[in-house]
Length: 185
Image 1 (cartoon, rainbow, N blue to C red):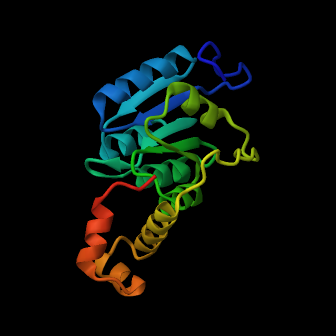
Image 2 (cartoon, rainbow, N blue to C red):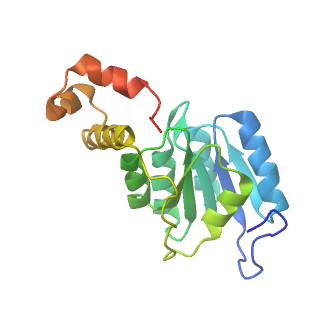
């Protein structure tokens, strides 16, 4: 989908909720999605997003993973409970497999790493549910695979550092240092 294209005329409900605590990014993405034919509402916090969903559950949602007052996964779960046919995607600068799997289980269609542009977001929102993703041009490095595994166990332990360290047979402080770093390429 190019930037000249808009959402198809066959889609009647064009409501879109964008949730991100980065206000400049939120405003830019909202403006770009309006130009593509969406009726955009914005929220900067989990509480604002839940209130907006309760007022009118949108057909589409773009939700940042980490928000100042909570987790974007909670917003996706709330939207899915209020409107099961809603199409949502998660945007994040802290991508890992565990949270991607959790996001999909909670009802998200896709999981995009920041910086994602409006074309990528629009394509992800409008993609067929059975569409297969293209294989990666550059597969993950061994360091990235290790980091992803640690993140998966961390998520499975409900983000409990001590329990994750015990299960990985790793010192807690070492694990904390790993979790504090950005993902390797």
